Image (spheres, rainbow, N blue to C red):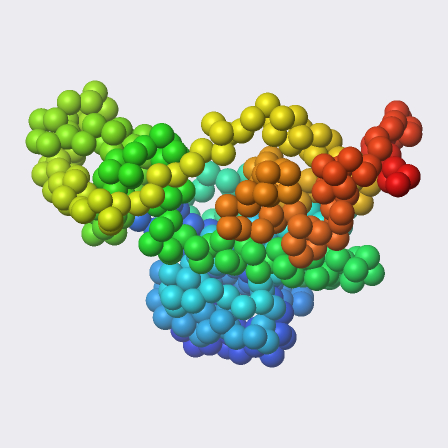
Length: 396
């Protein structure tokens, strides 16, 4: 493929017209995320049939023509592990892309490895070996070297060929609808990061009371605004564990805030009055406006529930090996626990078990619930097989 760097608006406009005409493009980005609130976009790479192109966003500040293409419903965007590419689209447009196809996700539906790195997928699907050695590059520096350009463009060079093979296989094996559902799920998960309730993903919340949760929420909101105002990563503004500690302690003064060893740095002393104000706002909330207590499924899990979850894990692992699909993509331990609680204890928490919906129901079918109902017998068929177990329906 020919390789080039676009660093002017007119060239970029022509590229976008070419992408629109092709209707499909491989897309990747290089960015730096260590020192800013949001990752700093430093390079965009595109692959078209016979052509790989990089675009310098520092030289082409108006990239709206590309973001518009990500939002249309005619241009297929091929990515690998494309969360950041989706985030950039959301950042610059306020909307998520329409037609993303992620080769990492697709490969998890064709084999048991997920998530696989780009080099591993290139080798598995195309039989080619890459030699990447620019992983620690500071992509903000200019000019870019020939080695940096080679590395960056190699990241998109094979995306179209990989997707072509994957799509053909997925269609032939009636799994394309599975992949499309997972692509949409990936997009939805990134969009959910903008939700005002995203603070609920903080670790350690299940140990907090409703009042402490209110404090955690207010300090989280302060942290987000502080990171935005000062263009700093939020976890450099205040680590998650320190946020949870503040929620527990609920300090009343600046000195109380700084009394924790890790909170005695100068930047915290400057921010302490605002932290105290956030805590005070939470403490003044009426009882009816407090967040509800968050249940810890693991803490409430009975021994029987643990055993049943482990049994389902064996059944699911064997089924995924049989179908040659990545178990980590089909379901996690938390999904198995949810299924046990919903089916055995009739407590789904108001949410249908993921393993009983969509393409996952095709993978698991009635297998897991039939195991729980005692309708399935388990035996070892071939100890040498990668799926040595057989689950057989017991006679009524």
